[in-house]
Length: 222
Image 1: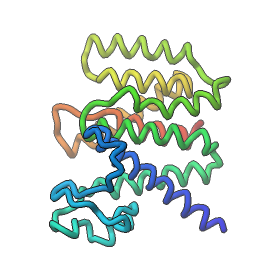
Image 2: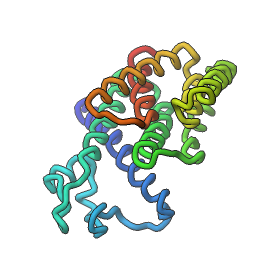
Image 3: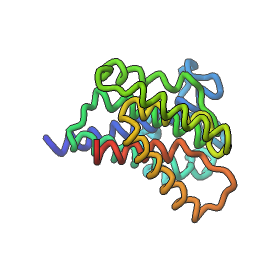
Image 4: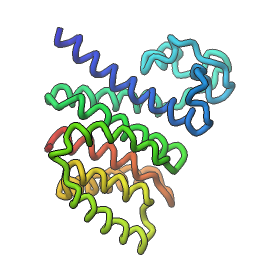
């Protein structure tokens, strides 16, 4: 029974990442309510539903489109595995999943949008309203305002980060306080520096690093 529950949590986490990826792509194209199934990024032929199952669909097709034989982006299954692992760890550490899942969904949507397009929409913050409503008595609004002010000044002076990074850090401070927000920022910077040692770029998307760092700090320390 425990094994089934763990597999279910892992699969649910992978499904959340898969859903967020499709949602962001459809939202960008204005097709969120089109009721159209997922399609290949190359030939745009609709994918049979059994090939859209997270991770398993990628393995079943050997990472290729069955129609045009082009490779499916490798980061799809990697992000699904990471999402599954994070939600599984949240369950194993007995975290409040009703509170954690909507926050997890919001972070994934923000990360996918920033990673793929380099910007986000304000509506992507909406899932945060659920944990805000559930744990309003434990929030740190003044610390969130302080972090927003300091990071906004830093962003205005240096232009080293985007305004969306500032907003997300402020939201993180509201939920966890400024001390954990500093830990998350430090870990995100370390992850970013580490990965960019192998991928030299002049610009980078920072929200995915913030999201992964938030998951790590929350699961281990909060």
